[in-house]
Image: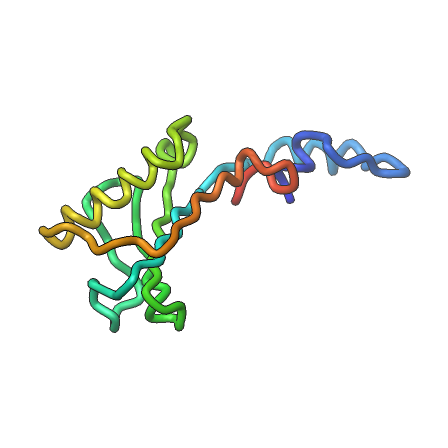
Length: 127
């Protein structure tokens, strides 16, 4: 991944030519993290692939639409994706978006995962 190359975490033998190193340094690398939410049941429209909220850094993929039962994936863009917030605070932020979108409490979560691609030594970013 580009983030690993930019961090010089890989050594090449023979070394990469200067023009390649310059190109690697010149490209932008960013982070878009995800909060993957699996609920005990689906409370959102099942027939639409994407859901948009008013938060400028959060948008939702309806994984249920694509065959992952009762699952939403919140895509977090900068600056929220770079936030040094705990997983719990990020989860609370995403759940707050859902409450605002649907005007009611959200059902119980069966499980959730927060990605941290910028902290992963094997990616050091996500795009």
